[in-house]
Image (tube, rainbow, N blue to C red; front, side):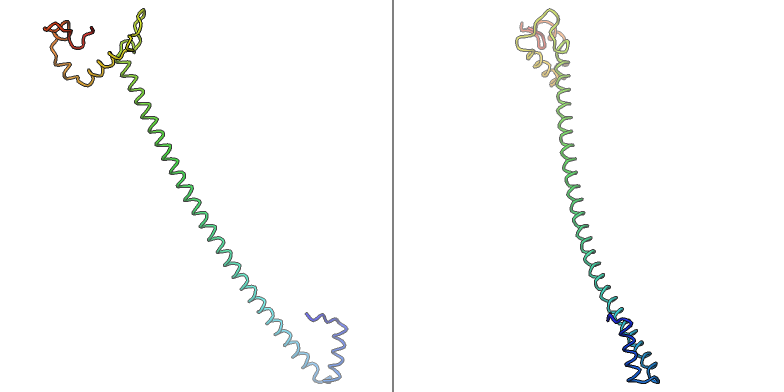
Length: 173
């Protein structure tokens, strides 16, 4: 603190011995030691107070940084959750549309194959119709849309010619 070596202390003690005298010297040294102890105690208290204030300031700044990081993390979590939800909706919509298209394709090809003999293939040795089987498809869809009417027609009209001479409904020309 004061950078006083042994030589300076001995010189000061000799001067104090001469000025104060041998009788009062121990009392003065004791008082000086107490003052030095009090000064060191005050210095320690002051230093401790400064360090606590610095720690409190550092702790406050650290708390602020942690709070800011938590806010950023919450924002990032929310953004990721929103993105995941949007992606899930897109995937579900795509899956639904693909399932719908697939079921329409399967149902459409099943209806077409069911309406045509041999699954739409011409019998062996015959060529396909010039209209591509459109007439058969139209007849099949008409029969599907009006099943009660087809069942209500008498058997005489469905087989052979009608009484007026025209071909019967559902009969091939």
